[in-house]
Length: 69
Ligand SMILES: [Zn+2]
Image (tube, rainbow, N blue to C red; front, top):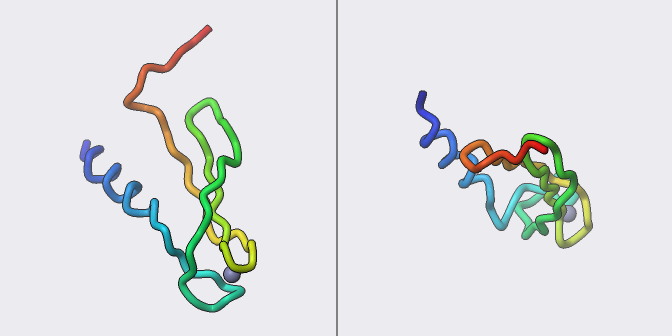
């Protein structure tokens, strides 16, 4: 039950630079909301130089109130 440490690692992934396989170097990335899922929001990171998708992240809202209608 070490949820706080896990969340910190996820936060670290919210970097402004990621490795782009197309540019073959670490590049500044753009964060884009890709999907809104039932368990969280999925973000897509694209290279700001060539537009290649270099990663994605699922941001869960488990600690927040989940609205069920
Ligand atoms: Zn690139």
